[in-house]
Structures are given as structure tokens and as C-alpha cells.
Image 1: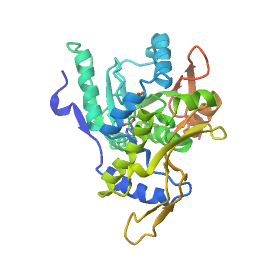
Image 2: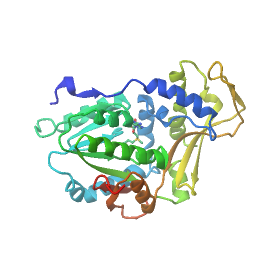
Image 3: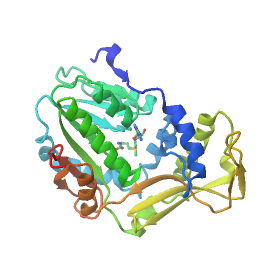
Length: 329
Ligand SMILES: C[S@@+](CC[C@H](N)C(=O)[O-])C[C@H]1O[C@@H](n2cnc3c(N)ncnc32)[C@H](O)[C@@H]1O
């Protein structure tokens, strides 16, 4: 049993709410308009997401499980003895490994640590702890000299790495690798990425006309009201919209007003007006081919060492970026 005092370490730097507030205000005025995807991931948002991933059309979780079961021996063989595994955005995953589970949602994190502790009760070799914070907080924590042995493996599963787009995925990979290297740690990443580029299958999986999908997205507006401290967004004025953008290989999920809306988000700023049918991006889900994943890795000065795909070879891809930093830059 993990010492309760160090069971969940709060590594958040407390800026989360202030940063989110600024991102909401600036995102509404941006072109294209967007709200931060972190708004989707409070405790209630995760509850709604967990309901959505159980639907049959949402193939990602099932495909990832298929790949993990099939290649578990090859994957675990890559883990050096004594390595620390940090799972970025652990969500509701209950993986049977010794690791540090990181998530921005405190309640879900605590539930995941509880479940893993129960599963490994009595197994003295398993040390399970939680890290409460964002990906950026984690990078900062490592760069400040966190004591982590000699090798770190980051797990980034459930296609989460694509949620902020190419640039953001590259930045997290690069910054995490640099922080480890500066701290004298070896680093590897084991990430999963959806490679499905079939518009019909994608629109079936991201069908926001289905109530539990729409509820998950629109909950982000209620969370935005909480962050802003007043009811700026009325969920009844909005619906959700999803489309596959083949040019950028991503599904864009947006909040969409159903009537003309004018917001006074903050004193001293001009009002924001939105026409019915305008799109305010809520989150993206990248659908990256093996070539695109190579480009993401290279942009972070990493290289893809090994890739495993599901039997259909079209989606649910599990990618392994090994080998640490490419020192040729
Ligand atoms: C799409 S879910 C995936 C969950 C899990 N990895 C899986 O495979 O099912 C994304 C998870 O990442 C967390 N998350 C999203 N952005 C984050 C950030 N910037 N920092 C920390 N956690 C984040 C959310 O709270 C949520 O649990």
C-alpha cells in the first residue's frame, strides 16, 4: 500500500483557472474561434466521456485494447528494469503496471489510483502514485529536479496526444524529453494514435447528434461558466457540430450557436457576436498516418522506433517512440 501522504502529489502550479479564463476570452475573439479543450476534462466531463467511449461506434478504445493484448510481450520487453512510467492523462484506464498516473481531473485520478491499488494489493513490487496537474505541470516538475531514478517512460494513450493538434503534441514531446535529459534521465514515449482516415467511420464515431456525445461536448460550456464565475454561455443556445477535415487529418468538434449571440465576456473588451451556425472549436482529434506520426516525432527531435497496428491496419494505432532525443539538432 502506497504511503497515503505521498499517494497523490499535487504538482499543479495553481495557474490552471487563471490561464483558462484568459484562454476563454482570447479564444472567443480568435479566428477561428475556439475554447480550451481542458474545459471538457473536469470530473463531470470525464464521467460523460466514459459513457461515450462505451458506445459501439466509438472504436478507439476497443482497437487500442486489441493492440495491447496482442503485443503486450513485445511492448513490455521495451521497459528497462527500474524505469518510472508516467501516464499522461490517465483518465479511467486501469493498466496493470507500476506507474505515476497523471491527470488534471482530481476525482478521476484518485479513483484510478484506488482501483490500481486494489488490483495490486499485496504486490510489494508495485508502486502506484498519482500526479495531479497538467502535462505542462509535469514537464515543469521534472525540470525542477523530481527524483525519478534513471529512466522515464511516458505513456500517452487514447489518442490524447492529438487533441491539441500537431504543434501542441510536438511541444509536449519535446519539452518532456528535454526536461528528462536535463535531469539526467533516459526517456522513451509509448503513445497511441488513431490512423483512421475513413470519413464514414469517423462521422459514425463522432456523431454529436447522439445525446451522450452532445452532452459531453456541451458540458464544456457549463465548465466555462464556472471558470468565468458567471453564466456567460446558456447551453440551450448551443448545439455541437463535428466534421472531418481531410486536409489536416483531424476531426474538429465545435460548439455551434443555434441563434445569434452577443457576449460581453469581460469589461473593457468589445462584445463578441456569433451568428447561428458559427463554429467555436471545442476539441480536435487527429487522425494521423504513419508518415504524419514520423513528422510529429521528428519535429520533437525524436524518432519512431517501432509501430504496432490493429488487424484491420486502418485505425487504432499504437505507436512507440523510442530512442530518446536525436542529438543531431
Ligand atoms: C481522451 S481522455 C483519454 C483517457 C485515457 N488516456 C484513455 O486512454 O482512455 C483524455 C484524458 O487526459 C486528461 N487531460 C487532457 N488534457 C490534459 C492536460 N493538459 N493535462 C493533464 N491531463 C489532461 C483528461 O482529464 C482525460 O482524463
